[in-house]
Image 1: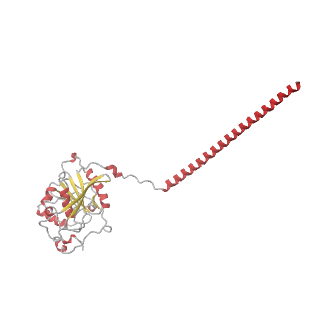
Image 2: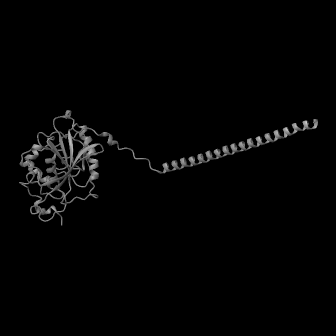
Image 3: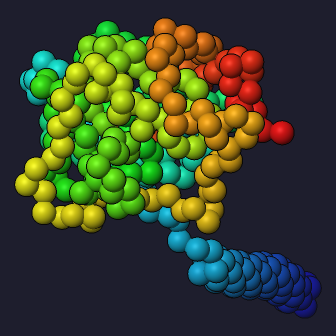
Length: 324
């Protein structure tokens, strides 16, 4: 009995040792799993960091290759009202006879809008865009501009799109005494003969009606201004020109490039003889045209109205309205 009672504790210790040994194994496995998990997480973090770094590096490289975005056009912030009643009772219709010279128009409209605002001239810019298939007719387009300018304007400027005034002393005010030739022969960079009245001419609507507008017979470039000078004399209107301007032929910038846009100076059929004659009856009274559409545009903050116009031509009267 003594022997048997002493053997039981030995069995108990062996079983306890086995239990502890099994428990240690579980802890070891658990610890190993935790180590493996930590290593995996560390590897994943390092891998993601490497990818992110590579991505950022690639983004920087692409950004360096791409050109910087263009700066915003500063003129877009210069829009201002062109019809402030506090500037006076008169309002100018700035009429631009036009066809296809868009690069010049993009310069002209914001330039003139700023120039006239600086001088506190109430105005609206009207572009008469010829969209028919006939030759360009500057005089007829100015007639259209006069008729379509509205009752809110009381004087007009017959203004070439390629001529920009550089001297702030030039007067664009209401020409009450008579027509005012802004681009006088003493100042125009190209044309210097005494009877020249082209480029920029201001006159009241009343005086323009007294002349019956301009002749519609001049298709192609040139001579319509010379004929209009005779109309001014026939209407007994006194012509005024700038005085006290000391900038001479540098008073204006002429932005037309003759190498890029050649003028239509061809004289066909009887046009050679007819171009020097006075047109006693034609003008506003026999003008024929159709307005295709009107568009209100803003060019670099400057508002303008584009009137797309189809002129009509009586080929029995002026067969030279078409070439060929």
